[in-house]
Image 1 (cartoon, rainbow, N blue to C red):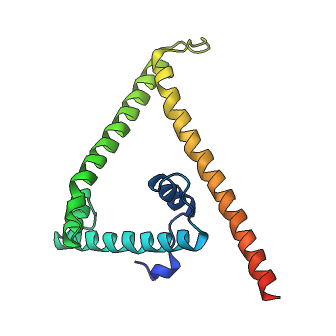
Image 2 (image 1 turned 90 degrees about the horizontal axis):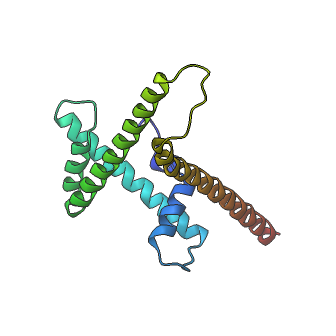
Image 3 (image 1 turned 90 degrees about the vertical axis):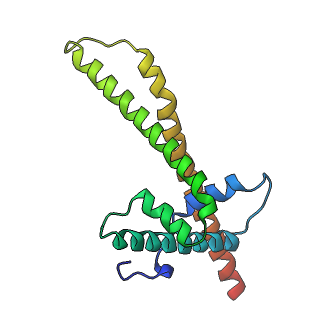
Length: 166
């Protein structure tokens, strides 16, 4: 790490809050101090895993940390039972990314074949991309909403702390 301690680094609160919300049963309440504790624990875990993966890469005389280094690091830190699920998840993610890339390239090729100034009709490929665009927009909207909620909670806490200090 470049001079920063774990206390100086914090994962995005909105992402951690979304992870927490999606992993707990509906209706579970997690106070802000518990969210902060989960955030700090996640930060420590990610930092520890990244450091272990970097050590694996250095041991192989490489500066680039690969997914294989991360999986080996998981074994080293005795979380090897998670490696199969992580491997599957990574392959699925890579497959989705490749499909998006292929669709984009295909669309660009079709657009290049069109005559300049000619209006283009919607195609099946355009319809295939709409759900992906909508999902990306929904993720951005959720992040913004969660950040606003957290800011409001922090303001409320600050006000409560201020009033209790009086």
